[in-house]
Length: 375
Image (tube, rainbow, N blue to C red; front, side, top):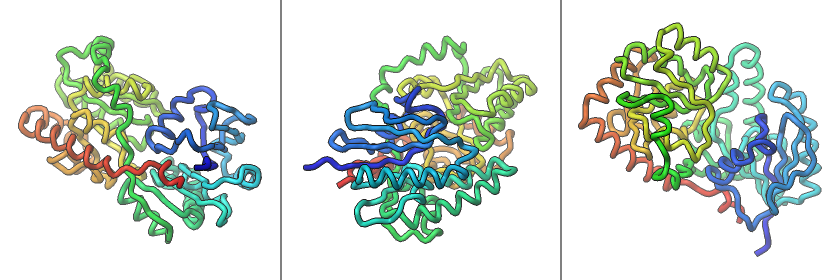
């Protein structure tokens, strides 16, 4: 069978292709499962730098197109022009757009099929930043609308995202595809003792959050809740983001700096050590722009009971008092009370552990490998 030619439209503001290629591999190969060594891939990516052809693997060529997150719209037409040039040069069989809005730049043609992955509502995420980003977000609504007019097959990983596509009048093929729980082969052999010793977590009840440190993730609610919990409760936060310094200051002002630990970025294959030291997982997002969060699936797989915020995305996999607990408010008092109640109720704790594990195993069986769509 002849190799398929796949054009992938990407965006990379963090230098993954040059500095941290394994992070790209994690998303593209492990989560999207879009890679097949039998196919040839040409990746055209928005980037902070311009670079000619980069050949990381025999069947993957990468071209970086210089732009920046704040000037995407200014460079958009230039990027669209380059896409059309690459289509003429590469003659792809498929165009894959894991960043949905980029499909708005692809001309419709019967010479290739366009596949998109709707993993979040990018316009809503942008608007959550407030200020001028609200206007910027409106532009991305238009781009999503145009993208959905072009796409032939759309994968999505949450009911709210399916409804979002239908609202814009999407007429192509819709495929539900929750992300798989990846890197599970590292689960049994991980080393939680290193984390326990590093943060002095012996004899502590450990609460874990893994998230980007942004306002939408609402991590300050967790820090304020720790103040209401006994002194043997510790809060371990994994992730990086522009809110880090502010969150450190919130911990200081609330007098809990010695119980709130910022672990920073952790490679995914090492993440299981953090789940293994955790007694409870908190995901407190306020902005409902996601599908089903990967970290929720991971915590259920690791049998760490979750307490989550009340946004609809959480309910894709969390059933209150069955596979986790769902907050009714945005109050630190409620979060602290639910946390203590769960840790003091052995029967409920074990029930949520087992139900959550069964749920994620059944849920992720519905995953569709993107590479299987490149027929």
